Image (tube, rainbow, N blue to C red; front, top):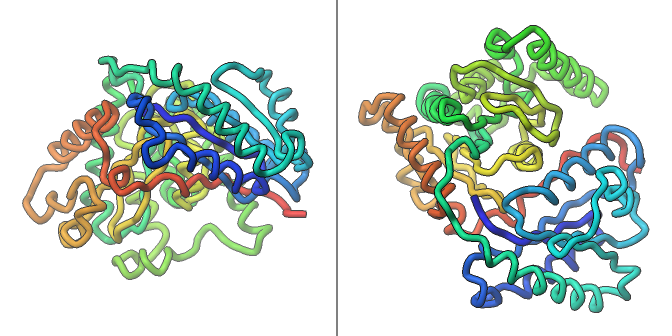
Amino acid sequence: TRNFIGVLTTVNCSATVAKRVAAAFENGGLDDHPNVDGVVALVHGTGCGMATKGEGFDVLQRILWGYLRHPNFAGVLLIGLGCEAAQIRFLLEAYGIKATDTFQYMTIQSTGGTRATIEEGVKRVKAMLPKANQAKRETVSAEHLSLCLQCGGSDGYSGITATPALAAAADLLVRHGGTAILSETPEIYGAEHLLTRRAVDRRIGEKLIDRIKWWEDYTSRNGGEMNNNPSPGNKDGGLTTILEKSLGASAKGGTTNLVDVYKYAEPITAKGFVFMDSPGYDPVSATGQVASGGNIICFTTGRGSAFGFKPVPSIKLATNTAMYQKLSEDMDIDCGEVLSKGVPVPEMGQRIFDLILRVASGEQSKSEELGYGDNEFTPWQIGATM
């Protein structure tokens, strides 16, 4: 759906170098390569001070592997410091990855410091550009779309306008052979029975319940609880309990069968409606969905979330007309018209589906026009920081 070159990092220590490599291609740096949508640095705050075995390390490796192979990246440069826990060689060995003309890796320590690494990084990205620019759009089936379902900054209208409309669009995509990915496990808590009853067999339903039990243990051992109240913004928007939010959030999944359940950032291979375990925090959830193979995002919001996510386009759906009018430069569709103008939910779902197809075909979403998407990459940090 997009054609980027990514500059990724194994550790926070190489973030500055990665950003400066990408910055070298701003302000006309890609004028000779019009089919390349950009060079984006995706950096994060982890990669060291962590155990090299266990859930936290496995999650980071799955995320990096997912982005290295993502179809929206024509090429990837992976940059490390050299002494971090998340060694590049560990990732290469775990997934059998080798350097190619479109995948390169380097460390600051072995390359000769900050300036030398930036210069070498720019050189390697430049070498990828001619091949990346050969990519051209062609018409294909919607079965190739993997739609990431997200919601944030919810209000009392979410469950009766935007989320059922998005559900209708998700159903349309599934009927065309595509994939719809529901996530944010804490935000389906209390409504999980609405999903398990749609599971294609008992095993799939139990996989979802296993993730719920994992979350109950995870929050308990960190002094929290699943059955808590929504955020202050959700309360201001009219929600009173997490169960109200969960009912609206789970509705995004539409009405088709639940065909599989995945751990965070696991490669999604099934077609149809699936669930991927994740936190409710939108950037973390979307990071996992994209690592799993998602290539377009629909984000419902009642408060007005500011969100984009390179290398994947994000479409924002307003739940009420008043907010849409106030933040019209940020919102793509006013789903509030279900109430303010009496637009039937199936018709609004068709509008969303049509926009998904247009944006997947190259039309820019509002967040892309505003330049969002460079800062939202946020791997889920599980476990102790040591």
